[in-house]
Figure 1 (cartoon, rainbow, N blue to C red):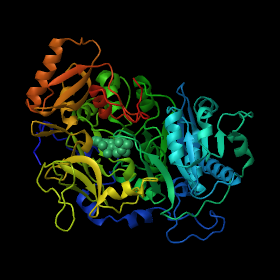
Figure 2 (figure 1 turned 60 degrees about the vertical axis):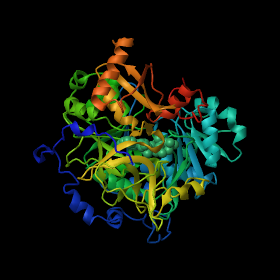
Figure 3 (figure 1 turned 45 degrees about the horizontal axis):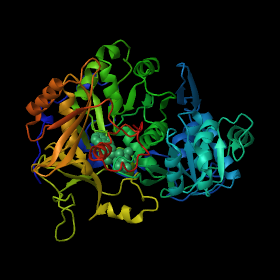
Figure 4 (figure 1 turned 180 degrees about the vertical axis):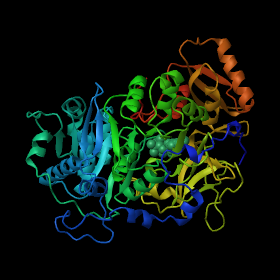
Length: 612
Ligand code: ATP
Ligand code: MG
């Protein structure tokens, strides 16, 4: 495969000084921890199964496990009972908490409600809710009842909702009165499987065809048996972000909690006294795996902001709630960066000891900015809906190479598979993928199946599921390279790679260089087909406030990128735009830019943040 330029290496490595550790990091020696780690050990750190009294006398087998029991009830039975499990921050900044004991009760009531309604093992319960307490109760109450939970973004329109609920065979929907009227009424007739709509704010007078959740909860017992589910029973259904096409429904099982536990321990460095804030919406996988399950499993208090992102508000939450571990996304960090270092510094963020980011490539500049703004760098990590949990990460005790997503988690075996010029994996005579061994050679990131939060299927797409495994490896669809120390660098999604005059160009690398120009606030880069070059690197750029979109500035930015990247990789075309299209989970939708540039149909736009 053609080699690629390496612009990251000019960023200084960030060393960690043990004298700076405020708490002892959970992962101190990477090599030793990886060598000693087994998933069975991680399972042993959990309870393994609800005890017979919790299961209503059912004696569970050796492979029983229930996410809700691990996340809530076992804490509610011990010294954490009175501790805040979830702390909701309202519009006025006031906090409202649910303790572990209360969460255990509420989730049991919710499970009882489902049972009374005849909803059982494997039945799908969907939610269409903002970050309200009922959403969290529904996630955990559903899995307590052995049913399967599937969150939907509250901002989805009727069509994407219908599409997902049909694909997912949704039997129950939990939502609000307003969302029901606006989005479900128009499609209710298309959802014959949908048996019950539970309204969280019915206030005693539910609409026709719906039920009042609060009334049902009040009538239900707050103690009920927890299903003694098997590790391999389906627990969660998550739709992918739809960045590359129609979203896929990834199936996850109860054993995923083992990975949530281990990754919370190693990648997020969770300690019992932490105050943790994951800014992702539970409508996508990060918001459930790390906004709900992982911190609860660790008995940690989790902050939930019920409002939308706003720079000043976020700083206030970090400050007032004394957040210690913060898990957020590159888009949000770039927005904070646009607000300037001084804004961050005008708040007391002294409690913060660990910041992590996921979802998109994290520009090295942002890692460094974190150090200036928060006094600590941002730790990038990588995973996807299919992996169910963090797979590659930068760790609290280890050096960071800005631009690198870090190294595989203990128990996770990663490799890089060579690809041919069509982007297919190259196989040897025995049908096994050829692995890349050269430093910095680009190939597809592959993972060895066996980690507990691996998806167990794409719902109703068995063939597609099978196609993603080749010769004993799961192929992720992402292109990466690795340095001699084993640090992984993201190059791009297989689908986004630009082929121009014999070079393979990762859009992220070009976007990162553009972002270093003082005028550039955001950049998205795609390849536009060209007879001579194959593809022409084309950039869409959003300017910082105060800059004028002139031709001179356009040429200046192109010249700047050429000096950074060389003429073969720098954009040949550059257009100014007010906004870069993104998914609701904050990912740049390059396929949409490309379709628009070529005048082609836009394809699935159900996850576009703000249709333009
Ligand atoms: P779809 O599969 O429907 O196209 P999607 O892949 O965007 O959507 P997700 O599973 O939410 O859906 O996103 C996972 C993808 O996000 C990864 O495969 C990768 O491309 C990108 N990603 C996640 N974390 C990082 C990271 N730290 N650096 C670079 N890319 C990342
Ligand atoms: Mg994907």
